[in-house]
Image 1 (tube, one colour):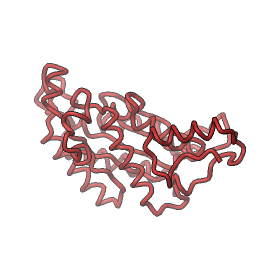
Image 2: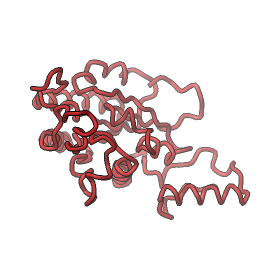
Image 3: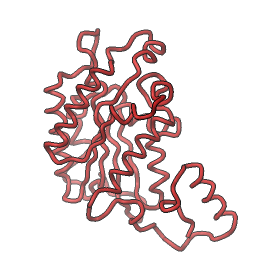
Image 4: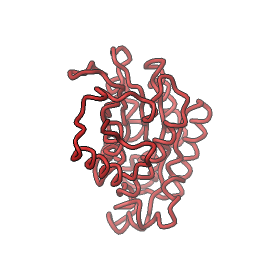
Length: 257
């Protein structure tokens, strides 16, 4: 990461992945939610590339994460696997064989973890999909099935466990709501507000439960220029409304003082 042009320097979070990352600011997405949540505490950088696989990511890894930069990310949220899991038999399939996928992801993870002693990483596994909804939206399932997603997700989990890496079982997480097939996707692949809320919740819980030093837990991070903001009734009411709309518990609310 190049040195910021605007100070003071804050911890840098990087969201690196395919379209689930690129679109994470759409429809009240999880990237937008993280940016709002960590306002005045961390800067969020989005490096999302629709249609990409772990193979594509590996090819540009040193450009996205140069090893010799003065400022390195404090946290990377890594997601590849959906496109990798595409059926290789469909025309122009982006699918990556599962053994290669695991090998690619291990190389990516090791590179990121080697950026600095304080660079942390959370991996999202391959996600669930709604095949019926994909067909309705695109005319075919595009080679994506929930079963192939499960297989790649399980491979990702095994890799994360082998490397002692924090991970989110994305495939299982999206299927937790009883009505998940009707609520978490807008096209069978990409996330609605409800789907993004699941990702946001899982990420913040992983961060909160981590014993990292320095901490990246929102509750414990200092707020930039704390005490130098307005204290008028209007501002207080505005922050109350934001917290209520975001559904942030009292103990974790964005404060105005």
